[in-house]
Image (cartoon, rainbow, N blue to C red):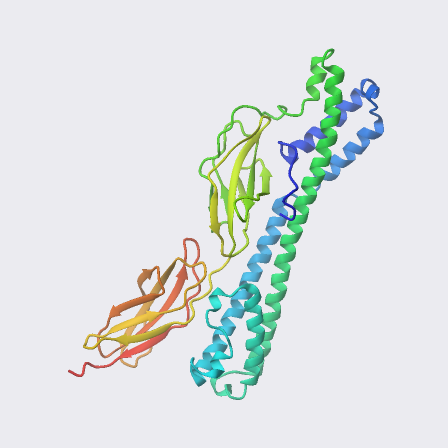
Length: 406
């Protein structure tokens, strides 16, 4: 949230506050003669009704969540284009001069999967400049000025997409603060007029007295338990939990450190569509509420969300062994956010083109080994994965296993 100090001062939903405010204005108009003793006039009612009507048409948070989701997805797609372009550019340099050459080291792309977004964009701009200088040398490997123009366009599109996501997030935060602030303003007036109404009728008219009781008018009250089965679905991007008996609404809060909490949801549904900030570990908690106040929090969730997994980089193959059969060793760079790696292999005759690939193992580290058959060519590629996402396949690599000389 934009301002962690802004908190709701009321325990009903925005919809319930709007409805109660509208009904209160009707009630106050009916009782205006009695309320005038405490300085209530028609202008007070008109002003409260105007505030309530303006509050009612404010877009709900879900509208801005959707905008953030769209911007995040667009940024992820454009980021993937930039990373893939950098990888293909670096591959040409490696093919021409080798990965240990000064020309390759100038690119500074090692460990790209761990780059921050700022560093990725900075690196992309730098690689474009360096590759422009290599254009003549790498023409034989397919590098063209058109490719460099497309690269520059992709970098600009990625930067604009990042800015758009930041803007969408900022707008959502500001609108949340605006909604809470206006709700608190209305609630303060509603509370004041309700106190006047209860004071006027507490000893004379129980029926009218009840019209000025805020809580308890929407089925609230009763003991509340902590919501059960609080979870986040990383595919649909939805928080969900079991409905709580006696609850009239729910509240979800988020925190970067588990201490300073900000409200991100307050409504009646036992689910909430939400896209967290990619690559940032956050705490989340939910609780129910009704006319009596809030219940206990469910057990906190702590997770890091990734809107995309980068493709594996640095795939390398090598053969080891003093005697046959030799062992092929496959290594690659770790991918941020990945908890597993799927290794695919194709075995063909010595010097042959890749055939059909099959999944041979899923590992939790960035290495894989197996005993080979001689006089064969082994192709491998790897896919990074976690519980809810997979990356694109990396470029395949191969190694020839020679004939056993014995």
